[in-house]
Image (cartoon, rainbow, N blue to C red; front, side, top):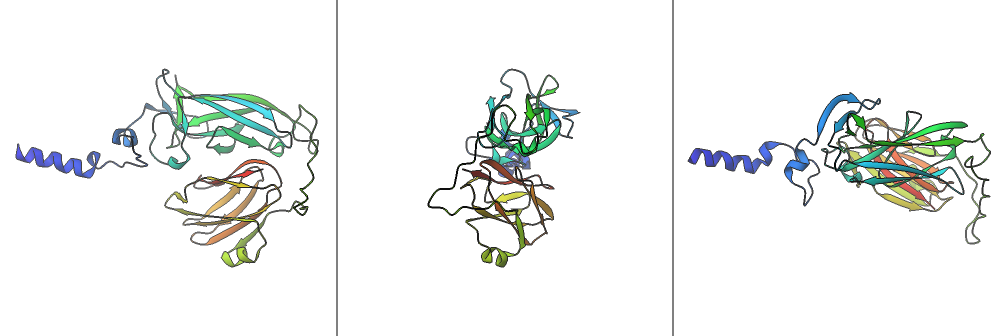
Length: 290
């Protein structure tokens, strides 16, 4: 009896038999944080992500609506049920009804989405009719599924000829002139620089510094609000070789392992734009341009 009590006490001290409790939060049980959720299927979503099947009752649901933006492209709304977006837990264990979404155009991934709204620039939609798909994923990047099918929603988008405007269903809205208190800005291409010295000498309105260590983003991914026309410096240090990508602007920057790299970008389009890494597939921050 004494030996049994000692064994049980030892198991309690290690925390759930020594199993990891990744992203364990107050109010979340150890079993939720590290145990299995649903049934992991051998089938995938086509992009290599395995399906995680759960019962239909109480399963995550998503509906996709598209609204033309008066300035450029579309504003997409992800209406979810039995689901919550958890950007701070990406890469952790699969928790019931939690995770993120992937946005695809004709089967090609455009972005990872961590909230109910996303701005899709017209430049990312070629001329013609296309199928837009949004699919829900758990924090461990498995796709939520019901009845052997991924939980997703689709919508059709029709892109116009290049330079014809922001969308094909309404006349383009002229760009508003700059406010009197601000000097007019000429849209510029992004510039890259290596090291903090280059960042200090560059004329920028906002600097966003992010570090990637052991597959985690520091500070945790958030949303940075900036004004349209501002120059933003994205200063990133990664502990592994990777590539920085700004969605919507299609700007990229090589990230050497252990070295600071900087991307300077003039945000000349309004909307919500994700900044992520290609290799590690991490969202670093979101730029909300007003």
